[in-house]
Length: 473
Image (cartoon, rainbow, N blue to C red; front, side, top):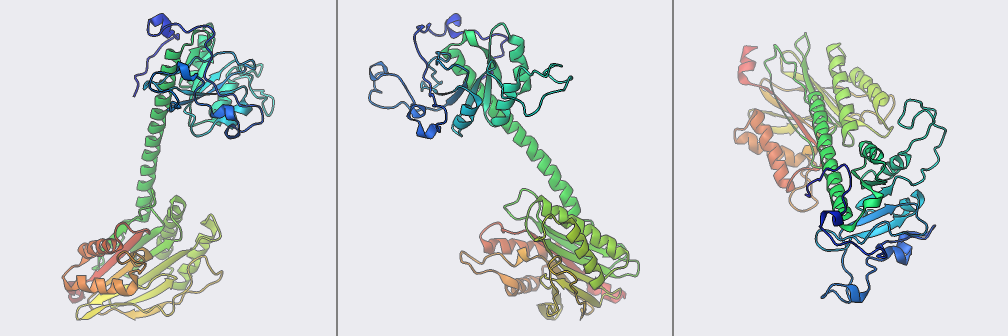
C-alpha cells in the first residue's frame, strides 16, 4: 500500500526535482463524452491512449498499452483546457482519464471500472430541491454551501475515491473537503503528472482501507447481533427440580451470517410437568431469527401462565400474525408436555416432524403424527389436537427441526429423510452413545452424508429419563 504523504500544499514533481517540466502544449489523455451520449456508445470515451505510434516507447509499437487505473475528471471546461497532464501509474502504464463537464455527464460516466474521481470544487452545484433555510449548517445563514457539489458527488459515488481540486489560495476549502469525505485535495495551479498519479494511487488505497475498516466494523456489529440472537434462540432451560436430563445442539446453515429461524425451549411448571418445544420459522436471516426469539419467549410466558395444547398454539399463532413482516411467513412447531411421573406425554404438532423416542429393549421410533395440525400462520382459526402417548419408565425423547432430515445422502439428490435418521440413531444408541455425545454424533454424520455443511439450520433437543430417575419415583 502506498505510504500516505501528508501535506498542506501540493508540491509539483518538477519543483521536487522528480520529473522534467512538461511542455505547455502537452495535452491530456482524456475521454470526452458528448452530452446525451452513453460512454459505451461514444468512440472517444473508449480511447485508452492518445499517444501517436511514433511517440510510444520502444517495443510497444502497434499495441494498445493496458490500463490499470481509471480517473473521472469532473470540471467545468467546455473548451477542454489541459487541466490534467499525462498520467502514468507505478508500473509505467497510463492512467485512463474520462472527462465530464457537469454532474449529469459524470453520472453517465461513473461505471464500476472508475477508481478515482477528481472533482473541481469550482463546478456549479445542482439546484437544491428546496431552499436551504438552515442558519446553523456549513453553508451559513445565506443558504449557500460551498461544498454542495462535493456532497452531491459523495452521495452519487459512495464507493469511489474522491480528490478535491481547488486553488492554492483556498487551502482552507480543500481541508474542509477532506473533512466532508474526500480522500485528499490538490491545488489546481500546481498539478503535474507525477504528483497527480501519486495522489490518485494514495486516494484509491485510502478508500480501500476505509472500506475495509467499515466492513470490519459491520462484521463486529453483526457478531454482536449473533450473540444477542443466540441468547434468545438458545435459552437456558428451566428444569430445576426435574430428574430429566437435557441436551441440545444448534448449528446454523452455511449461507447465513446470522442465525436462522430455528428455536427451542424447555421449562418445568410448578405442578412438576416438563414442557418442551422446538420450532422453525420459514426463511433465513435476522428477521426470521428475531421472530423465532419472539415466539420462543411467548411460548415460555404462556406455558408458565398455565396454557397448553391447542389454546397455547392458537395464541402463538396470533403472536406470529401480528409480528411477522409478510403474510407468507409461517412457523412449524412441536410441543410436548411430560407428566410429573415421567411416564406419559401430550404431543401437539403444527406442521412439524414428529419426535423420536427410544427405550431399552425397544428400537427407536417416531411418535404418531396422524393428527398433525397446520403450521402456525397458515390457516386462521386452525386447531391442533393434543395426542396422549405412553413413554414408559426409561426413555430418550429427541425433538428436531427439518434441517436434520433434509440433508442429501452422497452426491445424488436422495435425502436422508426421517427413516434414514431413525436408522442412524438406532445405530448410535446401540454403540452406547447418549446425551451430548449422541447429538454430536448425529449432527456430524448428517453433515458427512451431505458432503459438507447443511443448507438449512439444525436444532436438536434431547430429554432422557434414566433408570435411576425411574427408581427414585
